[in-house]
Image 1 (cartoon, chains in turn cyan, orange):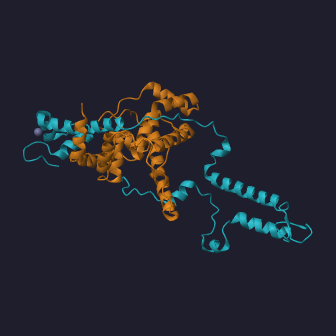
Image 2: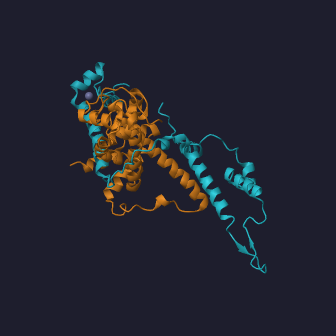
Image 3: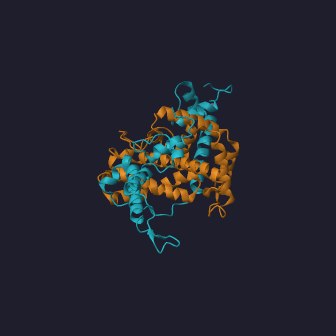
Length: 176
Length: 214
Ligand SMILES: [Zn+2]
């Protein structure tokens, strides 16, 4: 950074001293102490920045909602990495239970069949039904999709990891 | 970016200063953070009382949506409540809270982008595009301000933008910003210097602000 041709501090030097929060050292600092014009210019930039902060505050609403805190959580819910897998496991188990419960009572009357009752599973054996249920709960995708999808991971996927993969952070400047 | 901080800074505060030094922290605040970290719910509620307004505004400055700012602020404090026991140094509470808030805002935008991908394929209109209830009645002046500011911010890099907002909109000190972003103070100053240098050339925005001065 260099002083401008008038002998005053350059705008860059003024900004630098403003960001540092202290007068620059050496000749630039001595000049700043002695020159009302330079001090005024630095003050002008500072006032604009302060006005910006005030204006932003004036142009923002006040929060209207009360923050509601949860009750202290039970220890098991702190198993964050496994939360997703546990949820999926419960959902699969619940789905299997519903299918097993409904299958025998879902009745249909065969036309002309004298009210003969058949189960939804038709003549399927228990073993075949269980195999189907297992297949469904382990992999809900149809076979065609299963072939093109990556092998199911045994790792519990965190929501954030999925999000990181699908929508990476767009920050183009890593603040390094 | 992680949400836990264990730094050992000795001072932090309002960010009123223009450089790196900050005024000493209020002893009552230190006590409240310690109590909250030890599991005192009332102490944490008191911290909410202190910081809800500024966290809400911080989020609003980045979303310009009152409803989203309310939702995100709620999430920020719940997350903070669940993690406050990890705070070792009370001085770190505020930067830690801002870090959680910044992460929450980033997550909000990533989810929004994800939603927009799906709505693009499904042909639905994105929910968030509906005009906000308060937008219709918002004064022209406010719209103008956010418009000028938004235009200026597009001229900054992502890092310059965030450092500038944390400093001059959120009123954090350099040291606090460094803690929030997990960067050193000289890096923060470098980005801030570039941002302010662009700001001083922003005649329209500065002119608009001057009109507003009493
Ligand atoms: Zn001068």
